[in-house]
Every structure is written in structure tokens, then in C-alpha cells.
Image 1: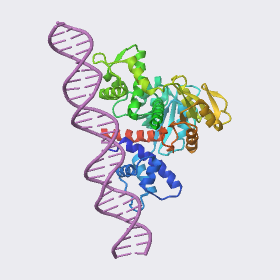
Image 2: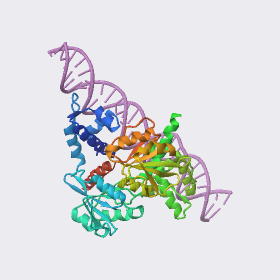
Image 3: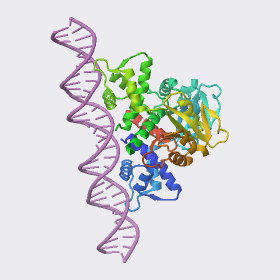
Image 4: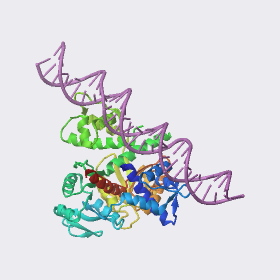
Length: 209
Length: 209
DNA sequence: TTCACGCTGTGAATCGTTTCACAAACACTG
DNA sequence: CAGTGTTTGTGAAACGATTCACAGCGTGAA
């Protein structure tokens, strides 16, 4: 119903709106939000329309109300625990990043095969042995997971997660995961990002000549 | 000239082609690459056409030649050093990830303000104090950088990098960076990725009902 | 040599997203 | 209370990317 692009942008809008609210502003215009988000005012208005919120022509959008409308779309109806597979540097970055961030979406279980890490609490999150993965996922009713393991281990992690009931994955490994229909995968491909940046950084400079 | 989507995909194709080559295959059809990359054969053919390579109707694409054609587009003409700002968990993940990966694109300098890290070599990369940033960037002729610092420090890091000559950024901080025209920024927004996954994981399940 | 098959390259159609452009709405001013 | 200026909401146009569909070609078989 709502496109992935719109979902991505309203997530950004919400973050910006919280900054705006923190400054004490109660209203915001589409062109202000657009400037902050790096898109056009028409895009903001279209996105806001898509999620069914309406502003006022005179005052723009009510910041608190718009945050609530976005949250009604983005936030799960009740608290959802997220699993993290792989507690290397990247995994720890994710843990420290998400700790205490959102009450609705939080990493509640980490998995690693390193005996040094297993059964320890890292950034407030318990690290379980990989062998317990299915059991913990099922017990906790976990539906989403972050895969932060080396490429060679990613497919197997995905398979086990999905078999235990996970149907949404954020994948940092540079491989395309094979998952059944109905499982949503968001790939975060850093190599691709870097190669793209290197390419367009060069292109843009050439344009200037 | 070539769209960012195509650039992203050919980066993925190259990685897949290297796997194919490692298996000893010398030729590959568009439908095979499409299956591996998770897109359509027509998409693969269109992308290959865009970068100016041609296959044979009978044998498909020559793996080695296609890798070379993609590399001719993606790889900088000569070795390019990349800077990394922020050597926390995420920064170290980037270092260990890119170490020895590509001879053409490598992280050659890291910056952090923590005196514990400064002047040490981490994953083969020297960590400099943030104060030396402009000087090191200029001396090394660095054009791209990865920003892996907390949100509050990201904009200032970007400003300093750009002022020293960087015109391509991979930004992990959850803020929109303000940069002059001609600077290309690729945002890697993990919060957005996770919220999108949570949303679509829910949606897909609902579809099934 | 001829035939049949299956793949590539690509013009044209399609699809989804973004932007335009303007009517309607509201606040403020005098 | 009418006039002015600015903004929203949104149908329609424009744009960009993807997919279709098929002509043309090379290969292997007979």
C-alpha cells in the first residue's frame, strides 16, 4: 500500500520532526521539512498525504500530531524485539547504536559463536550461543533480525532465523540472501555504497570541467 | 550518464562474477546473473548494454571480459585512498571489512579524537588525530571519506573533509549532511533500514491472511 | 549445408514515482 | 468585513526506470 520509498522518507521526517519539537517549535511547513530532509516540498506533502495526515494551509503541520501519525504507520502495535546475529565490531556498533533508542524497536538478543562473548551482556544485551538461536527466537517471539556476520555465514544465519519465525532481515553481509516469499530483506551493502561514491565523486568533478 | 541504480547493480554483478569465475566458469547468461543478483534478465542485459559491453547470443557473457568492462567503469583510473573518520565499533568494522579487499579503493587514513587510538595502527591503518585531518587529506590527495562518528559530530567532520578536498562521502550518521554542490553523499541509514524492515515484515504477514 | 534452438541487444510499452500547478483554505491586516 | 499573501491537498503531467517482445545471430545437430 505505502511504497518503500515513502516509508523510508517518513522515517527520516520523524527524526527531523523530533529535532524540531526539541527546539520548541509546534508547527512546521512542508518546505522547511523538505529543506531538512533534502527533498522537495511537493514530495513532503505527497508523503504526508499518503499516510493520511492533513495540515492546515495557514500553520502547516502540527509537529506533535505529524510525529504521531508517522508513528502510527511505522511503529509496531506493541513492543517488538529484534535479534542480532554476529557480535563483531559491526554487531557491537549496532548494539551501542540502538541501545535505549526506541522503546518499540530494540535489540533484545544477540548471537555469536565466540565462547568469549557467549553468555555475557554487551551494551545491555545478552549474548547467546548460536546453537540456541531457534529456541530464543521462538520464546521471545522475535520477528526481525540484523545479520552482521561474515559473508560465508550469512545465508545459514538467514535460513535458521527464518525457520524460527523471523520474517524481516537487515543484512550487512555482501551476499544476496535466499529467503522464502513473505520474508522482507533490506540489504545494507557498504561496498556498493563506497564504489558508488567513488564513481559519482569522479563524475561530478568531470562535469565541472 | 549512468544512473546510480545501474552503478549499484553493476557493483553487485562484479562481485557475483568473481564468484562465478572462482568456480571456473568462463561464460554466464543474463538469466543466471539475474537469478544471483535478484533481478530480471532484461535488467541485466540493459545494465550491461549501458556500460557498453556485448555478449554473444550463443555463449552469453564472457566472465573475465565483463568483469573488466565493469571495472573500467567503477574503478578509479589509479589507486584512490579513502579516509575514515571515527574509529569506534563501526569504524573498526569498516577497517576490518575493507582491509586488503580492493587494491584500487582502500582506507589509507583514519581519524579519531580519542588519544588512546591516535597514532596507533588499527587493522593496518594509521589513526591520526582529528586535528591533522586537513593536512593528511591534502598530502595524500584523498577524495573520498567514510563518516562513522556520532550524529552530533558528523556535520563538522563533513565540512572539514570537504574543505580539504574530499568530494565523495559515505555517511553512517543519522543526519542529513549539508555539503556544497559537486560533493556526492551516500547515506547509510540503519535506523531507516530497520524501521522499513519492521514495517514490511508486518505488511507481508498481513497480506497472507 | 540447412535447420532449429536459445540467447543477446534494443525500440517501444509499461509502470511507479516525482513534480507541476492551481483551487480551496486560513490568518492577518486595515 | 473584504483584501492580501502564503500554504495545503491533489489531479494531471512529466520523468525515469523497468519490462516486454521480437529481430537477428551464432552454435550445434543432422
